[in-house]
Amino acid sequence: MLILLRLFLTFFRIGAFSFGGGYAMIPLIEREIITANHWLTKTEFIDVVAISQATPGPVAINSATFVGYKVAGVLGSIVATAGVVLPSAMIVMLLAWLFYRYRELPVVGDLLSGIRPVTVVLIIVAAISIWSSSVVDLTTGIIAVAALSVLALTKVDPLLVLLGGAIFGLLAR
Amino acid sequence: MQAESKDGSKLAVILQLFLVFLKLGAFTFGGGYAMLPLIRRELGERRSWLEPEELTDMLAIAQSAPGVIAINAATFTGYRIAGFGGAAAAILGATLPSLIVIMLVAAFFLTIQDNPIVNHVFHGLRPTVFALIGIAAWQVGRSVFFPKAGTTPVASVRNGDKSRGDLVFQVVVAVVGLVAMLLLRLHPILLIVMAGAAGLVRGAYRRRTPADRELPPHQDGAE
Image (cartoon, rainbow over all chains, first blue to last red; front, side, top):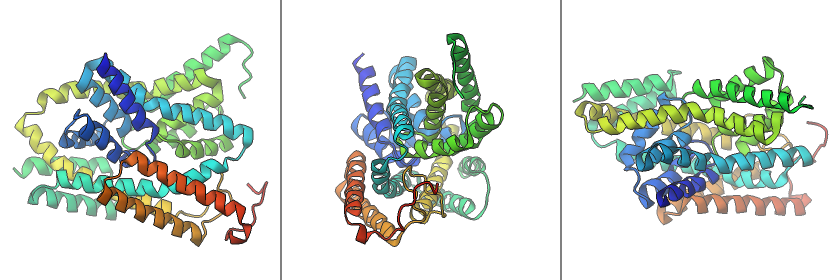
């Protein structure tokens, strides 16, 4: 019972401060899920991110569902997912109501003018953190460079790039 | 657009919202932005539940709130069409497919985790994930620091393109934030709170000293 509460509160916190999309949330998820609660190891978390690319749903929700399930089964995944969704849902409804009443919300604009640059910072921090756990030998280094090049220079679907990485990983051993 | 006078018809709308977002949620893979054009098609073109202007509002608000943009868009749409019940139905519909799929995947994954073949596959997947995040950093960075004209999604920034003062402010905040995170191990929540505060302070300061404003005068009704 206590673990369910803890799941809910942890993911509620994550959901309330997740600006900038799924990847920007990674440092926060890492701090809460991996470092503080040890519910996942870092490599497990990277695996969840990979899986999330090939399944419906954004990575934030999927991480919550996955961690919740691992920690406390079906009930855990429901509780964790509800936790991560609730704060932003409430804020969106509040914003929608305010927006249509007052038509303009300079406070929101100001807040975001500061927050948006740090979402970039968070994604950079996420990349650095993931690098240290994913590029561990020559093979993974090559995969990383190759994947980056393909994604940067071509319009290949990210899912195909992931597939390529998986195949490379299989073949390289 | 939503003058339901009978409870029955409102319930029907809520049920339809649930089903529409169930379909959307089941077919949106990868990043959340993929759901937005689908929402526009399902709700704007096929059903005209939302005016085009409201779709733009949805984008602005969905990006202004924390959380996942797909869920925020669902929340906003459901709320606009049918209040709390609509929002709840939309969120439930959008979340259910991934909830079920990931539970199944988790159950399966946790049993095959120690398989050596699976290990090799994920060994190759992880650096690919790094590459995805690296590219995202570049793309988001470009859209934040050098947005294309007229694409700033912030709800109240209607004055046109960014000024240089804006860019300087952003860079300063970003650099300080990066240093704080890497060297001081600042908690991400603190970073966000402080960055928001910086934005508020700057906004208040700019409004008090109009002579400093580098933006053209605000033009109401030009939107």
